[in-house]
Image 1: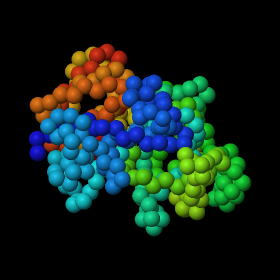
Image 2 (image 1 turned 90 degrees about the vertical axis):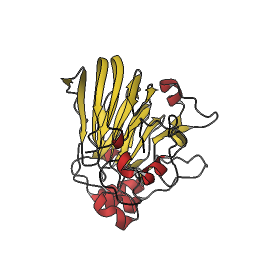
Image 3 (image 1 turned 60 degrees about the vertical axis):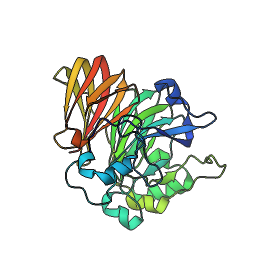
Length: 324
């Protein structure tokens, strides 16, 4: 298959805590009358399949491409039936999300779920915004269970004030919640298993209380995970850009890139990559095609495409994820 940079049609998801922030921040043409909490930008799930938006492969789904040429898309040896391993979203939290956890890999199968490790990059934050992550030192499983039933469990979470540009890494097993007033980029393991601990005593969009999953949550939470920290902001200069290292993990390596203006060369070295534009506009050229992507836009860089050119003006920012 002859590969080129892949952009996809976003799939908007209604959420009780969502709003219209993706329209005001990124200029999205959101469907009217809906409360949009998530935009699934790159997805290969049974329930949601991203569709290529332009180029030779327009109209094909990410899942179809992954099954037809997994080595060309993802790179290396891929087991038959494997889905594209990353799920990428934009989230608009106009209210607090539920306090929740995703099962760790060693327990997920026994709990009937999928492990989910993820990264949050804060694109916009209202004054006073925060995220919840990890438990406070000394919190026991027994106390956590009791306080969850009492509705006071939020007091046991580690609370981190955040602002634009902050980053939090969330390995499976880290109990967490996104606070109100935040719009984020989320790059995660391809999973949709979430165990809710507490949902602020609210009802869902159907008017009914949303389900809680306290027992599997208690089996999943790492109670030794206390006081996690935000990712640092140190930067290094390289090839006309400055780079901030965000995540190094077996699932993905992620950096934040700020352009000084000009062209930046992508060398996939036989591995897939992904670019997500934070500010400004980026042009990506590869496989005989070019795409221009604005703020909030995502581009998958297939392994089989080889090299690509990325052009951006001074001050343009993007996230870049690589398959390790």
